[in-house]
Image (cartoon, rainbow, N blue to C red; front, side, top):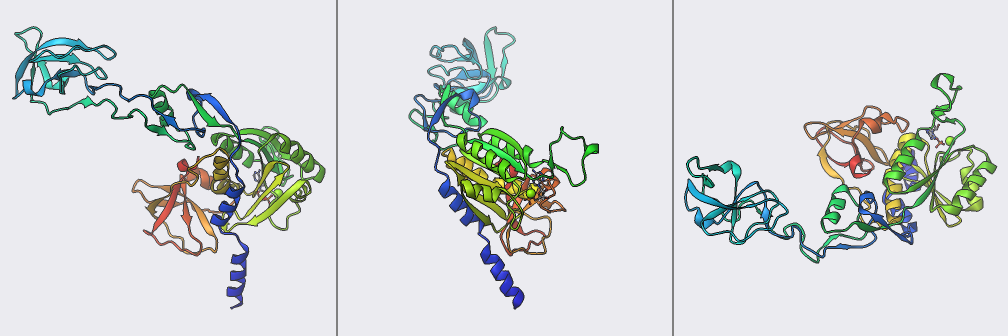
Length: 416
Ligand code: AMP
Ligand code: MG
């Protein structure tokens, strides 16, 4: 009974992830200001206006094959021979198709008026005894191998919407309707700090020279890379020493020219840390205990006009908390509309016999059978799990998993 009561108290002190996310997103007012960028450079950016087509794609009916354009009525049976009356390469203009003839045609070339099918060249053969004639082996179906004008985009269609994050395919689609520039949200300016006097930068101290107790700063590398992928401009403040004055200085200078200050480490409860009092002195800070594993400690506050976000120091906690909380926050700052990562149902090819009171994000990878395999060590310090894995199982609080159970899988590719 004592155990049950303390478990309940523990649970109620923690903030459910959905609640934390809703509260965090409530602070994420989209940044003012947009930017015009070349379509070449717009990958990953968030559109600031709808992209509407003023034309149709393809602009005209055209051939999907190299072959011969014909009128179906002229080829009533097998082995019909037709004279080749014109040649239409891609990019040329076609005259009308003469009755009872075929037009040599190439992929992407316009269908001549009067033709209603294309026969691929593999289904035709030149007549050995009649120069300029071909034989068509099988009668064609109406409209075969014809790509219709406007089958991709019709005039007036919104092909890409405001708030959409641009993908390589979206850049191609924008280009296909003639857009060489796109209006996108401005990049959030993010100041990144790592805290922790145990941290050492790779390159500054060789592995053999590491002092006892020192570890390399891993978080700085993945956080910077994640921020860049999310369209942010990153100012890397490096490792801020665990001293009050240094922390105050760094926060103050970062707050002046940045939209967001992101730190890792020093947000665990009971820790002798300088981030918390420093942020409180300069602005406001809420320390949250979020009911997720890995993760839990998380801080949100303001320093001047800048948002302050403090992530836990354990690398996997930092990584996962970034993906589930900071990622949607940064997308919302850019006016993004698709904030939640799409999860898919998949069978567990592992067992998870001990339920946790927190919602868990287990690092797993898909096997060839479509099942999910679990990385053996789910510790919040084991970054190998996030490299070995290709995604996470989003496991509700209090849930065990038996082999074959259907679970929710979030591929990392959805989050990056
Ligand atoms: P903290 O949240 O500061 O209590 O840190 C929790 C754990 O994460 C400690 O073991 C830290 O040494 C480790 N840690 C904190 N920051 C980093 C970092 N930037 N890179 C790698 N490990 C870190
Ligand atoms: Mg620390």
